[in-house]
Image (cartoon, rainbow, N blue to C red; front, side, top):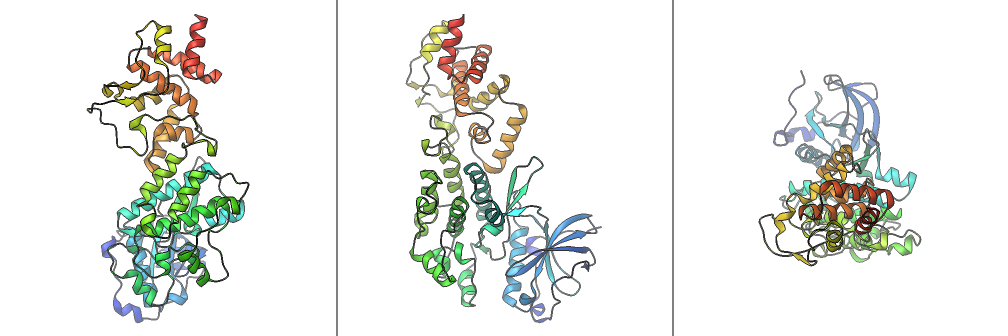
Length: 466
């Protein structure tokens, strides 16, 4: 029977072990800790080596991380290894690599066991395929921002966000499931002097190309340090070029403190990167932490919301949002009263064709008529056979991982376009206001889908046939 995995608070490395002579890195084919069959070396980092191993107790392939030979006698490296294990064990998020155990081998070598990720890093992907497409970029970084938001809420700053620490693991459906890995230099926000203590030892905490100005200067850090590093990674993912490049680490760190990267038009004149996205990334890259995003959640909301912001990225230029449906807004309070702007559809047109009383265009004084409005819109599209149950389930899965508005997610996933979503919103509003019956609305929506007409024009076309 496998023993119970350690909890973060259980992790303890006796001080006397810091002085022991520990074994070297593992050899392929050997049995480690009387349990793990070493199959392949997956990678070597500044502190640890990662192996693919077969767990003879669970009968599963997992990843095993142990200290590098050069770090075995380094007390600071060992403490960071324990910190990584403690931090990682406390983090349970779908977009953070899962660490399942931390233990000492019989010959006193500390190791941690992680889920085995079959995929490639963002660094490898950029090297092989070049910059990400806009759709893949938004999907990728919304997942990473969700992971960072969660880690920050647990009081942990990663401090080493870079392309090689972002992994793409394809799902069974061939979609990207992105994982944030390597919390080896992570810091608890509550730690006093953690950055300064390690900097005094003459060690780089982080990678110069992705280090924040405050990291480079050895100043106190918070979650906005990770957002700056993420800004560097986003810049590179869109352009294929590092935001800060120079011949030495010291020169790069000087640039991090004093210079801004060139605008996108200068490094990729033909890329047509949306202006709103450039502004978002450059805000993340602000030199002063107070000028950056306050947290990863707000950055994520701006990323998802920006996708529907205007014509400069060729999508959703006519996308309208009801006041309580914005990704920014608070949830709609069905018990509140007041006036809300209504969508730019002409209810008078529907009223005239259907023989109903004309509605006033402008404000609605009783928002309670919109109870469950948003879900009803999607169900209406489902009844019209424009959206399938699988589409709705996939959108819910995406929302559970990344947040956001279901309608927008379905547009982003390419299941519907903005026009048909707007038509369904208008149809459902008129249904709930008693201006059209559901069966009639479904007929109109199907006509919108087949002809590309908007809701008003489809109503007129169908009325003209009757």
